[in-house]
Length: 200
Image 1 (cartoon, rainbow, N blue to C red):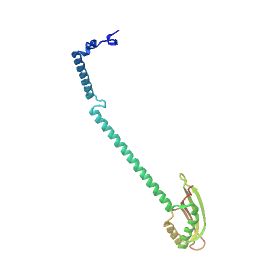
Image 2: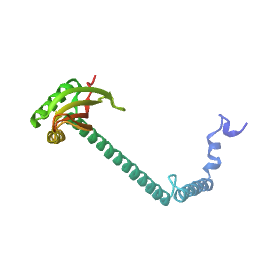
Image 3: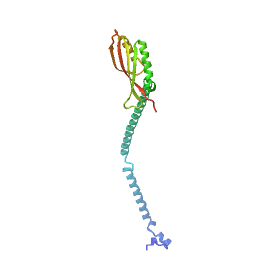
Image 4: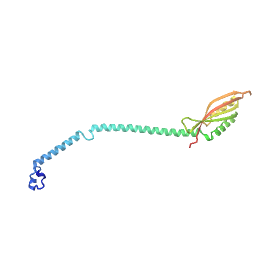
């Protein structure tokens, strides 16, 4: 068995071991210094994070990616703001110009009757039909068919009055047929209007 593993080794034998020799100790120190220098040289030549040029290139790439993502985010925010603004303006437009369906018939009859009275045209019967608007669950199209009697001048004034209406009325068709009475026309209007459906 080796003497280095012998538990009965004496103190005098310890003093004679090779590491106690100054030459061996100096060689060990010099070897450690050489190894440390080699490690330091390797860290300078090939640092763990890459060379200075590699780090500069990575920094440029990261800055470019950051700027691109920031630009994308800014565009998304601007688009979201425009969508929100458009939604608010659409809601405001609907509130101002579209009538609630529950009161649409009475509201339009009253407005048409007042316009007819103001211009001197004689109202006859009115009919209303509601059709859904494709792609919307909050709007319907109201089609109004209205008959009147009056002169050509009355008709012109009535159309001008409807054109200035605060309601969003669309003149779909107009037919005028002369009657036996001189200068009297039988007039049929077909008007369209958007109405708001009640939200659940």
